[in-house]
Length: 316
Image 1 (cartoon, one colour):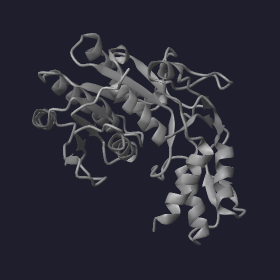
Image 2 (tube, helix red, strand yellow):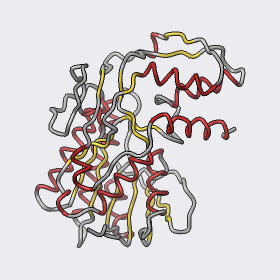
Image 3 (cartoon, rainbow, N blue to C red):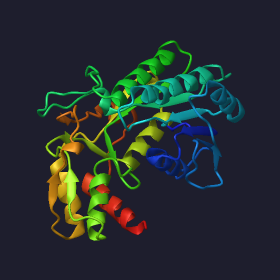
Image 4 (cartoon, rainbow, N blue to C red):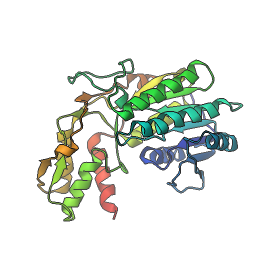
């Protein structure tokens, strides 16, 4: 099946970590969209084919105006809040913003396909063994981020079930790669390693390094999202994990980060960095995504980590 080509694709949260990589992926397609509308309060990638439109997605009127003026064929909704424990703030950005976007899309003469980005945090606590989680796993989120992503996804899928907006949802697992925010592992480790090399610190401070996570490179995630945007109607109304299918112990990731420095660096456990509700292990089954669009991850985590380190050391 030949992937569909859209004339206008909108990307919310386009200046963010994932958004920037999705923009680059869309621009590099053999048949890229005729125009990309980057919706964000900030600006990022500069390209004549990308039109930056500032918009506060929690403002329903502003969202209606942007969609009426740009008329996208497809929307990748990446904007969201991921940090902190402020449930009200997470609800406003993750749930209400998505509601505004979908309500406005439903009013369009031809509602666009909307890709709604959730998270593996929706699954919450797992057994902690070698279990691999597929999309049928009950959602037991334990954090404001996970809870609000669960609500966002459930609300979005109602539009698909009612036939008003063709929604597709994804649950990416732990995303890494060049440009990852320094608040997240492994970028947080690499930042501390760089600080030691630059004489700004003498050790690395960590939280719980015994947890295990499924890491996936952001460029592979962007490819999965683009494939779902252009796939046939059979993906509409469905949820897809975006995952590698393998667990990596955080302690092993830390050791790899230190190894990139070429030095021995002391590590200290910092109680302030230990989360109260830390999921012991979570690994994703992405076989549904593979069956739907033929997607497979192509960048192993050590290669992704190396590219992160190279990008970081080039940055002042």
